[in-house]
Length: 593
Image 1: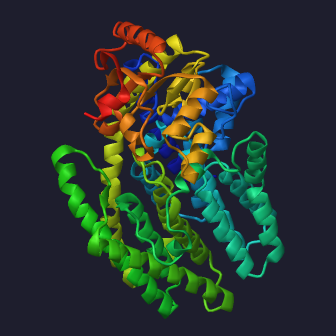
Image 2 (image 1 turned 135 degrees about the vertical axis):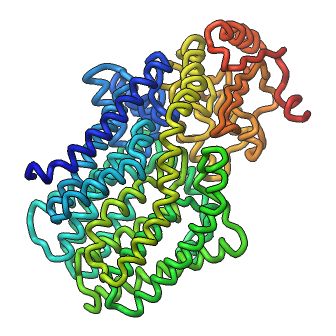
Image 3 (image 1 turned 45 degrees about the horizontal axis):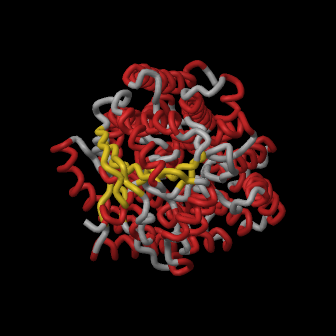
């Protein structure tokens, strides 16, 4: 890369690292070096990585195997880091930084190969930082920046190969990035399926087969390893989320419970790409135009609802519930979009649409986006849907070169509308990093200290398992199911109830529980004979329903000990943690009030 072409990358990396290091130093000071992450999920990976590095056990606790990570590669990378430098909480932060820099480097290389002007490259690399909020993703301590890197390389290399390029290096890049992406995040599976589908309809049978085998081989090997250790083929979270949805009917008519404006923006952009990429095909242009119109309407309705809240309180919730006519419009728009993708496939198969790079790029983006609305998540710090924004932003410079000049004014206006919610989203994430890390420090770190002081080697039921499992040596049983396969399987099969909880107490020797009883009412409730002895409460403006923990003992002897432990905790937890101690009272009496 020539010096001038290197400038956009250098500027983007400098801005990214400067802001990230500034936040890291600030957060390290606020939490006295005890926390860097906005959510407890980072410590779930770290707990598994710790047990694998120290004890050879892949699980949230060294006492049993648990396929609890939806990103096995990320967990193994952390484990490798622990082997090298010890159990340092900054290991995921460094890995996230390296992934972020890698993503910027890959996209700068793509822009250079595609001869995108230097100024434009710089603008889009910087936009990627702010609108995707690389910093928010960095301080989740999770794998999402690595996901952006691997999926971007997969999309680009697939587009080049399927549009006629024959270089061996591109095949290595496609197969390598796809196989890595498959064990980084499950959303990549839809992208791999899309590439496989395009290989098939282009009548490249051997390439289709070899690509599918290489891409999914790591997933299969990990699945077999999990089965051999008594867990399911897939990570536990898949069985928990698998209880939702309407099966095959979703392919034809799907009504999401809610929509997020950030993902909605990406959805519109992907179909703008596809519409212009296949501009000469009149029927496709009209069909995809209808999808764009419907998606745009929902985006504007949601923006109108969320913008006043942002202006008033500085909070951009990025979602609103779809009901009535908006729900119908959105569902029909998804249906029309699916029809557009199907017709695009048929047009490619029949030769009515050329196998151009832009067509392949836009088709793959649209496949990933539609798949995400069916089974993808939308969550805290926008981490689940961040790759949608990143991919659509990243490939705009490549795709927009094919847009007809007479339409450029329309496209520019559309992008201004799309960028409003993304800009507000990015500003909100930057603002929220510090308070979110502080809340995680108060709630999860001090809970982990409590458990490590009193329950190492003992069974304890919990539903906040990350930092507790990382810092302590307790025999943690996850009543939500993410960390304990038996629970996930029982929830998936509809067998998780009060009697099953009593069975878990006997099997794992559970002596106490630190849970949120309201979460388990839908399963028949926690055992009523458990004795409530106290509570912890931390002010949490983000998830107020999860800020209240109830401490329960399974018998009277432990109740007395637990009372003592809670009284002692008042001496070492910060005053922001409201600790209350009560006379041992059966849970059923409290719940009946």
